Length: 105
Ligand code: HEC
Image (cartoon, rainbow, N blue to C red; front, side):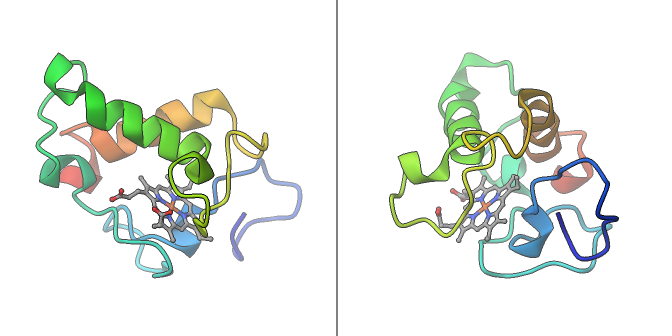
């Protein structure tokens, strides 16, 4: 769901149109905050550690339905509206929270 995608491609979350995420992608929008080092700055060293549960839960909820946290959010409700699948949200969670992800290097 970004300008370089083919019309018949599988939906993505459109995330880079609003967020910086991985440093490999140099084309990104700035409507949303940068998500570079997302897990690192929040101190997530192991997403399965119960100490990280609150941030893991928040991140899932935010991606699934951002308006549940902020009714006036400009972020689309990707999961809630069926634009992205649960499996895609799982992959995004790993990208944002795994210490080995390029996002947290
Ligand atoms: C149309 C723009 C837009 C798109 C597309 C978008 N976001 Fe957002 N996002 C925002 C804005 C604006 C905020 C900050 C305001 C808010 O919290 O709602 C935000 C906040 C967030 C936050 C919370 C950041 C924090 O520090 O609390 C996360 C995580 C996030 N976005 C992830 C994503 C992911 C992953 C995608 C793709 C599936 C995505 N966003 C797509 C605009 C967008």
